[in-house]
Amino acid sequence: MDACRQILMIFQIVVLAYLGGNAIYLLFFAVCGRFKPGPKQNSFIRFRHITIILTAFKEDEIIDNVIKSALQQDYPEEMVQLHLVADSFKDKTLERLRSFPLKLIVADFTESTKVRSLNLALEYLPPETEIVVVLDADNIMESDFLRKLNLRLESGAKVIQCHRVAKNVNTPFALLDAISEEANNNIFRQGHVAVGLASALIGSAMAFGSDVFRKYIPQLQAIGGFDKELELKLLSAGIFIDYLPDAYVLDEKVQSSKIFYNQRKRWMRSQLYYFGRDFFPSLRALITEGNINYFDKTLQFSLLPRVLLLGLLLMVNFLDLFIHNPGFDRIWLAAFSAAVIAILISTPGQYFRKETIKAILYLPVAFFLMFSILFRMRKANRHFIHTEHHIQSL
Image 1 (cartoon, rainbow, N blue to C red):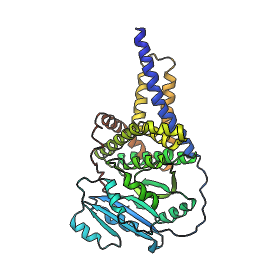
Image 2 (image 1 turned 180 degrees about the vertical axis):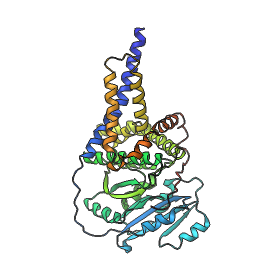
Image 3 (image 1 turned 45 degrees about the horizontal axis):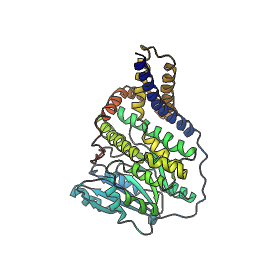
Image 4 (image 1 turned 90 degrees about the vertical axis):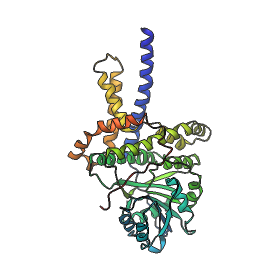
């Protein structure tokens, strides 16, 4: 009996270390994100030539409004080019798109991936381009987005993640997704940059110096989670990823449990894959080169999704009500409280409203969907999983 108790005690300590470590990590950077450093004031010198790469897969319904938005930037017209990689579009849509002032790049891959679309776009990148902006087919930039981006480049940044915000909160899942996005922005972007660490990439609303883009995009091979592969390559090479919180890009949030499930399955599988692949190389880089950004990135990939973390911590605390667990009950409660506080700190004020309370009722559904993914991830990163978009205008 004593041996069983010791085994259970060791198991509990290991699980507590992992889940509690997750909560502490989130809380630390959530707090750091709220102590925002002053904006980097750069003096305007010149307008740089910018190429916007818009990658789209079967987005016939929404693409027109996105293009119109991209063409309405408050930036010298002669200094901007819009390239659209239209993958698997209908012929009538392609014919209509040819009327827009953009470079239409028609793609019909045997197996479509974001990496293949970006590499195809790279073949048409103008030699005068200094900045490359990568957008998804549902992204809409604010009108002065390029001006803000151009000004930040005066600081010498080579890679910038911009602030992606929700385009829609029309369903409970969309609202939960919007809050999750802002939590990620505060914890993994603003919070990290505030203490001198690199921001995380999202996959769109990203800007690159053209030399970095030309060098690293051809090195990518990812089917899913290309942004994770890209940031690992950048950080392992010592390239800092900056964050521009006041340059906004609207992004469509998932509206149903089916889309939520497919999207999260892709994310979780790619995260687990890159953690296993890069943890030990990043640890070696930390010890031999002092490369903390590369190592911190692999630590991020070891974190549980917040819905899973909250659900598991809540379950453990509930079990503690019925199991005599001296010494551990308060620690488990502290871990759960830390995770909750981290999310509350990272949630913008506009989301503290009655609609959010209704959306919270869907968290158990989200938890069980995420939990089921743990047993179905094996093939999630081997095939392209498309996230459907439906919002045509604001």
